[in-house]
Structure formats: structure tokens, C-alpha cells
Amino acid sequence: MPCTVITEAMDDSPFTLKHAHIWFLSAMGIFLDGFDLFVMSIALPLIIVQFSATPLEQGIVGAAAVVGAIFGALIGGRLCDRFGRKKVFLFDLLVFIIFAVLSFFAWNIESLILFRFLLGVGIGADYPVCASYVSEFMPKRIRGRMLIAAFSFQAVGIFAAAGIGLFILAMHPSESAWRWMLVAGAAPAIVILLLRRGIPESARWHIQRREWKLAMGVVRYLIPDFTMTKPINPAVEEVVQIKPEKVPVWHSYLSSYAELFSKKNLRRTILITVPWFFMDFAFYGVGIFTPILITAMIGTQGTGLNFIAQDFYSTQYTVLLDIFLVIGFVLNILFIERIGRIRLQLAGFIGMAAGMFILAASQSGSQTIIALAFVGFGLFNLLQNFGPNATTFLLPAELFSTRLRATAHGFAAGLAKVGAACGIIFVPLMTASYGVRYTVIFMGVICIVAFAVTWLTRIDMTGRSLEEIEDTG
Image (spheres, rainbow, N blue to C red):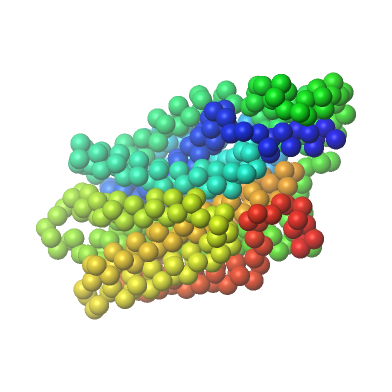
């Protein structure tokens, strides 16, 4: 079969510079997500002061981009399967750039919420297309690691945002500094958009449309000397001569969301959605308010610092803690194939819960045991990236076929962003009503629930092909 020849060529190909180029441009979409998340956590205290935001408004501003990402992931996944990966790959960045610039000019909190929401649509759409590109282009032997490595750019984006945010605060110590922080992501996004124009469409997407010549052209783009060096050359040459079959209308072979809930796929759908929902509830809820939580716990208000100095001070602590995010991703890349996806996800959720309970224990009356708080935050950051923050992104791409992959990943990412939005809105309201201690205890309980769901629906793809699990449902 022509498709077998082409997919085997993709699966067994050597890793080339063109593979690296495609992987890097995919990963940079995740970079922008991490950048935007963390730069908002630095900008938010300034926005609160400038617009005199209530706790509810704080949550809505923080969650606006995440809510937009819900729609972006859901719509982007469907468009990705219908019109191809590359069109969405370019359009989502254009949306991000336009609304990052407009956020700079926001004149009140309502306009800022609107622009952040629409910017989030672009961020969300990049999740399924990034996962699809990496999963469909990378050689089989390194596919899992490359997916995790791409997602690890979220931590790279966090660190870039920290550096830029601190630099802006130092150079422009004003409550309006948040404007420069929110527009800063447009610069790398423009560069990424220009570079993405030169990459090809997915060969596997062409195969789904029975466009054999186009699919073969992608193989030759990736491995120019393939037909001269592989013993399968005659078969490959035959593929180029095959007349493409008549392509049916798109909806006759495009998957529907209903298929995700079929008897065959229901268990997989629960596994890729519910734990990711709880993961993002905790990750975004804690992550975007980390500087504010640190300020509330350590009590920088009593040091005589003004609100800008407090933001700078708490951000420095947050940057130190976020080193554990990078370490977690590095450990995941090293051990993902040895330990397995599900075991890492289970261990990660338990570690995250432990981190939150340790953080709660650091609250002694009105005082904070700083060393214990540091251990709690650090353990939470380390274990989330060692486990579920990475594996929840990986599993949808591995558990579903090309025809359903972007739709499944978009659905899972969209539901995860619902969890993120709930977490972001929840934290300031919960903290204002019950304090930091009970807020982080609740986050620990959320992680335990995610552990239980993962355990009950577990399907481990480590060392297995999709065909090998088809009978498991």
C-alpha cells in the first residue's frame, strides 16, 4: 500500500536538520504559552493597582487568555483535521500577534479582558497543531521524547518572561509597565510566523486525503537522498506514479466529536481529558498567582516596599522556584521511556499534592516558615513537569490515530483550559475568603483526584504501538 511505504519512511527515517527545524518551530508555539502565562503573573499586580481590580476582576483578567484558549483548542483541532496543519500553524500566530499589540493599548479592564481572550484563542489553537506536527513528523524511535521536549519549551517561555518582566520593571518602574510586558510576546511571535511559512504540510494528513504525490514530496523534503540510499526505493518510486484516488468531501472521512465517546474510545477520552483538566486547574491556579501568593505568605507589605518593589521582590523568588520547572522537564525527557507515561503521571500527581500539603504546613498562625514554603513550592513545580504537565500533553497524540489526533488533542486541551480558567478565577476568591492555607490544601486534594482518575483509566503507550492497544478500548 502506498500509505504503508510513506509512513514507514517517516517512522524509520534518520533525524535530520529539517526535522529539527520543524520541531523547533512547533515547540516555539508552546514557548509563547509559557511566556504569556508567566508575564501575566508579573503584570497582574500592576494591572490590579492601575484598574483597582476586585478579586473577581483579578481572576477574570488572569483567566481571559485561558478561556480564549478553550475555544482556540476546540476550533483549532477541528480546523487542523479539516484544512491541514500548516494553515492553522500560521493563522494562530497571526491572531496572537494582533491581540498582543492591542493589549498594549487597552484603556480599561473590560477592553483588556477582551483582547486577552482573543489572544488566548491563538494560543489554544497552537496546542493541537503543535502536537500533531511533532507526532506526525518525528521518527518513531524518538517521537515521545520529542513531544515532551517540545512541551518543555513552556518552561523556557516562563524563564524568558521572567527575565523580560524583571528587566521592564527595572527600566520602567511604573504601574503602566504591564503594557510593555504583555506586548513583548509579539516580537518572537512575528519571527516564528515568518519562519513557519517555509515548512511543509504533514505527510500523514496528505495520506488521509489520498494525496500520495504530495505526501511523497514531504518525505523527499525531509530526506532528499532517501530513494538513493534505502532498499525500498523501487516501491517508493512506484508511489510517485500512482494516480491519486478521488478525494471524497471532507466530512466523509473527518472524525466527529461523537467518535471520542464511542465504546472503543471512551476510556481513552477520559484518560486524556479529566487528569489534564485537574492538572491545569492546579498548574495555572497556582502558577499565575505565585508572586501574589508569595507576597501574601512572606508579607512584603510589612517591609516598607511599594507595590512595584513588592512585585519585583516576589518575582525574584518565583524565578528561583521556577528552576524546578526546568529540572522537572529534563528529568521527564530522560526517564519517560524507562519509567513510562502513566507511572510518571501518577507519581507526579502525588508529588504535586505533597508539595501543596507541605506549603499548607508552612503556615503557622500568622507566620510563614519560609524554608518549608520553599520546599512545598519547589516540590510542586518539580513533580508537575516530571509527570503530568508533560504526560497529559503527550497522551492524546499517542492514543489516537492521524484521522482523529488533532480533534482529540484539541478537545482535551480545550477541556484542560476550562480547568485552568476555573483555577485562575478560584485562587483569588478562595484566598480572599479563606486564606492561602486552605487554598493550597484544596489544590492538593485536586491532585489526588487526578491521580485516582489516571489510575482507573490507565493505558500506557510506552514501548507499544497504537495497533497494539486497539483491542483494549
